[in-house]
Image (tube, rainbow, N blue to C red):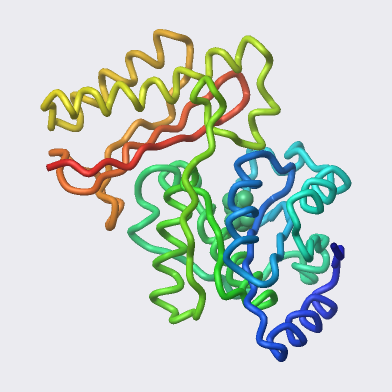
Length: 282
Ligand code: PAF
């Protein structure tokens, strides 16, 4: 496995790989890897000749009050995990390498698809994500890129970006990896105390509650959300949103029908955690 920190070196490697007809599977990450990253890495390993993992905590996607400075970082540990999982190249540029001007003057932006779920509460977040993902795609030129379904809005917006901008990459959606308790794996789980980790399991329970209500015939999205919010607040979580949106348009639904995303963001202590389920409702 080779660790690459400059764009020039990554480009040279990609140039040679393309020349020899190798397919590139790409897993973009912000590091502090866990099983939720290992699953897409393993999948990329089986589906491509070469696997590239990027590790870059992207300042552009954090709001001023968010956790950019405290976001967990450990390149040594991450490199060891990548090595264990058969990664060929870790691309870990510094912020200066990615943003020599400190920022960029030209962004990739999104409309409509960021009106609900996380986009509503994190202005500019998806613009930062899309801009860095497009930069990484330009550098790594992957045949396939792997994104976790825990960040379902990110995944959907990236799917639309490559469609709208005709970028020749296959986006592969990887199901959320959960702890035995149901808690979705996240680098931000490291912020949780033992007690908070137990409380946080209510997030997935609330999604199961929504699923059960829908299975029992409830179609009124507000009624479902109100019940689930009440449950989360009762166990001590501060809910940022609990929403049911259409899978394609990401617009809020009044009546639950078709392919839908039930999404939640809640604070457990200082950790903001997100999760979702995708349901087909007839
Ligand atoms: O999901 C993440 O870890 C990040 O948003 C991504 C896609 C690596 C872009 O910084």
